[in-house]
Amino acid sequence: MHCLVVKAHPLSESLCSSLTSHIVGLLERAGHTVEVEDLYARGFAPALTVEERHSYFDHYAGQQASAEIERLLSAEAVVLVFPTWWFGFPAILKGWFDRVWAPGVAYDHADDYGPITPRLNRLRHMLVVTSLGSPWWVDRLVLWQPVKRVLKTAIVRTCAPACHLKMLSLYKSERLSPAQVDRFMTRIERAIERWPPPADAVAAA
Image (cartoon, rainbow, N blue to C red; front, side, top):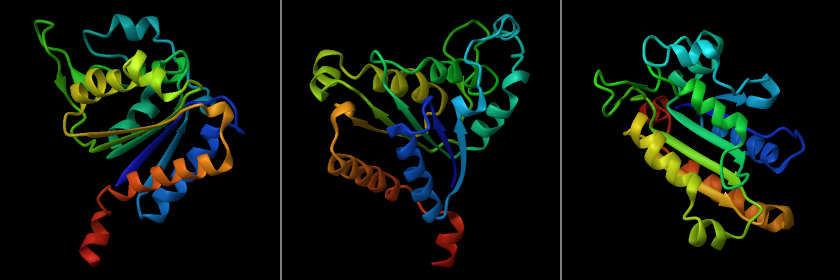
């Protein structure tokens, strides 16, 4: 598959950066093609522009994000790697959804402003890899996994209904041992192994 790996962390030496490198290696060894969207390194501007907002219900003026839009449209699988801050997306990743998962790109508005029509029919898999400083029970039992609920219900199900979402969360990320990080990387590897092999590999078999 053609895979888009989206990284949203400002520090090159961060855990998210290490996880991104690990994921890219796993995908390439499995025979998938990979594009990396490092939002901070590319200097992606997260704020929706005045022109983009004015055109939101007409013909979306997404020229300033055209490269990011093309990379999304070509993806059969998306991997998101980011820290969960205040139980939400980093601002730069939220802006990526605002400006790239836009009308005419990820969905179409209904004429009467009713339910939208999905457009990302090519997208088959989304793997979400995120780190949190909190323990698991705060995210799951107190806040009911807000990031997962938004991704699953409001974004993926709405824009890419054929896409399978898998979320892996690494809790207490400031106090991890190398063994705990290794176990988490193994979970990532197992999740990617469940994806279908590339078409040429199937044909060769």
